[in-house]
Amino acid sequence: MRGFVRSEVPEVLVMKAEQWTQQWIDLREKNPGAKFPWYQYGNKSAREWLLPLLRALTASHCSFCDAFPLEGQSNEPIEHFRPKHQFPECSFDWKNLYYCCEKCQSSKGERWAEELIAPDMPNYRWIDWFEFDYTTGHLRPNAFADSTAQNRARVTIQMYGLASNERARRRILELKKWREASEHVRRIDEFAERDYLENSPKTGFAS
Image (cartoon, rainbow, N blue to C red; front, side):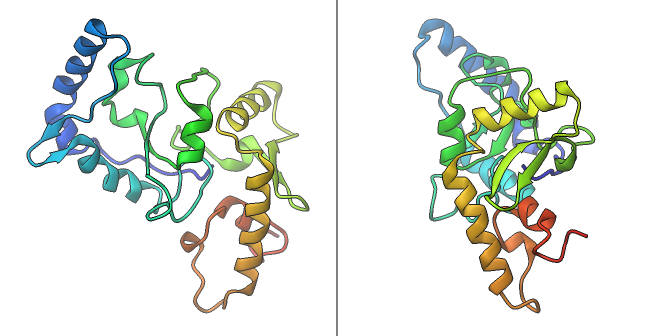
């Protein structure tokens, strides 16, 4: 889960978030099973306005598993960290929206836990919460963190499916790709699993 800095609220949300939020709340009251709508502004939907801005925050990587690239390989869902059906008042809150891959979003679904860690939370550092088994590629809570931090990391890993065997294999393959790429042209943001690469003793990043 790569840390990033949240930008200022985009102009479209400054203008429309309050209206769109109230529309969604009203719709939910009339029909609790209503599908969430990305309302229109100008000639674009809210999703079309927001997606490129969210994508830019993470250099086109999934906010949670760091998958890359998503364009052309995923529907690029916008993740509501606090689920939009449980927290309709947060449905168009800029701080609640994340660029995400389909696998992370489908794993979490509409579940919520206060323990969840956000990659743009104040003073977030990956190493404070997580660690890798570099031989297998598996992610786990930092064994040296306190029990509260370990529990929060465990909940986050479980809800976003970050410890799956598939993702562990992907980390190993990405490390192989990194090691085989020419050191003169490779750029960390052009690879998935950047935390794994940067912290692996096999890459040259870690001491």
